[in-house]
Image 1 (tube, rainbow, N blue to C red):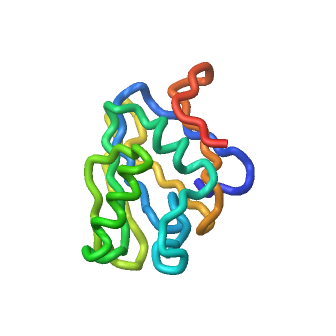
Image 2: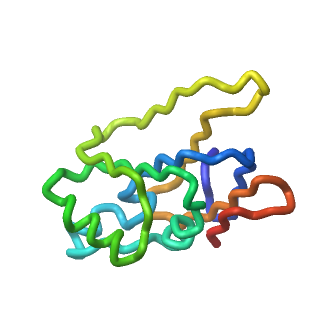
Image 3: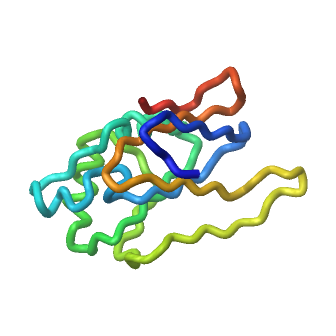
Length: 136
């Protein structure tokens, strides 16, 4: 799925989820910590992160070097962003997720691509009636 300027929707099972999220250009302005001397959330990203259920796992990926760890984690802490793990020094190339589907037919791998530094316009629902996460 590719996000555009209109709201996109993900329909998920009621099971707990693992969110694997890129940091720069996806959640915060790409290289903002370098060019502006501080990070800045992209439109909708902070709301999106805050709405992830506490039972879900959040893994952040970044190509940032370990030297930026304290600055990055201080920013997230100041904004009350919960995460379970941050992986630093990720290669610049594609991020590939491979997982097996459940015998019930439940898809176990979902990929969402978005334009760098664009807003995070995503609605996540367990079913048609209950919105879990909405970022608009």
